[in-house]
Length: 126
Image (cartoon, one colour):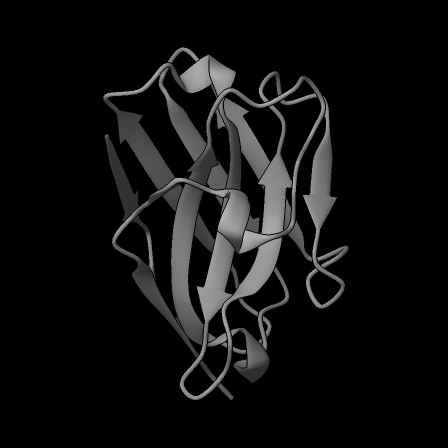
């Protein structure tokens, strides 16, 4: 299984970035998917998750209303559109897969995700 995250980089405060995560080696449509992030010295944090079909999404409190997660099962890819970025969004962002997920279930607990990407760094300058 491989999860390849991309799209990170440097953004200005108030700006936008779009992350992508391409999956291979798994039955993508059977996996709930999520984005987590980890800033230096802090614990890994749930950012957003999406159910197998894309019909259910879930967001962390700090990004609610600013970030949007989506998926394209035909392309085996998830996306994270990040708007109104601020310095607190600076972190390494990881995509993760929760296999054999029950329809509609999007757990926020990182321990339930079996597969992880390598991470992509997002830096927001103020």
